[in-house]
Image (cartoon, rainbow, N blue to C red; front, top):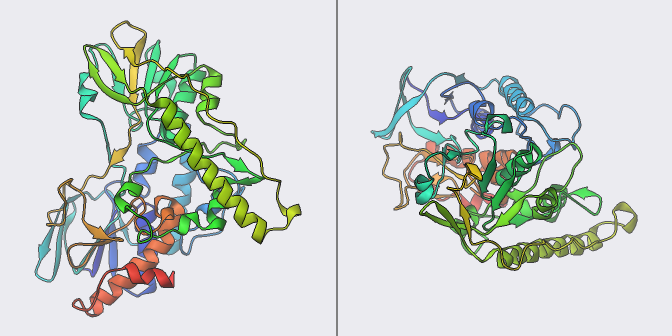
Length: 423
């Protein structure tokens, strides 16, 4: 089978790329291992909602937002939204088709799947960044009798054994799971590492509204001091609730969650915790206040006083000056450990020499270090908003433009960074 471009992955990013390629009249197919929005459908816990309001799901050519634009979609609603999008744009999706390998072949690629082999000139990897849980090496040292789970395995508190739960990681997943389990009656200990604290609403508007208007989400990967560091920054401490409520460390301790520092190792059945928790929360509060000051400065020059609420301060994070340095995993108090320590992509099927020493695809804003190979749907791929559904439109527009230039003249197509000026 032949086509010009193979897109691997029919999530929101792969579908946005499909729409953009269609606008360039570029023949392509979208290969999906399951059904459309497979990961959203099968790898999320039951109560999860999007962290961004519905109005921020601005996919290219998408139908108008259904329901409350300021609401937060549940996972079934998100799946339905992406399914509607695939149907609306007429994406050429081949479902239940697993990619087995991608290899260079002449001036293009050979994509071998469970449903046959495709020959193409270019490949777009749109499988996302959250394929496999990223666990620290010492996760294997959890004592027998204590269950280990990741957010990919976790569905709801009823699947957990009675007793205490240690949640490792305090980004969006960790704090949401910790709250849900604590409310179920199981005592939670939360191990807190570096995190990004923001209020859900500020001065009467959602924090993402402000970040969108101020330009935070449009910051380019070419403008930061270390793009690799920024790509590794934890997700915002937010929850997408109908009440638009805050969920931060103060809210969790108010429910009775016990806070400890970053988990540094497990030895002799004891989880060893860093003593740097007070410093970590001070840094998170400092960065939050810098963001709010930036918002205030923008608001004072762009909005009339009667359009928004006045500035207000956010209560500092409250933690013990000397938090516990260890959690005993052998006493029976902790029955479950949930590793909310992030994810990593799975590109084991990609047989192309583009990987760095850490196993990551080398790329310049989504243009991989191999002719005709592209990447989309990764954190801060081209802009900060690349991490969100909302970022797929601009990334797809840039990369499809570059891809069209590559197909027209492979020798002339350079880095994609200059395309940002046209975004």
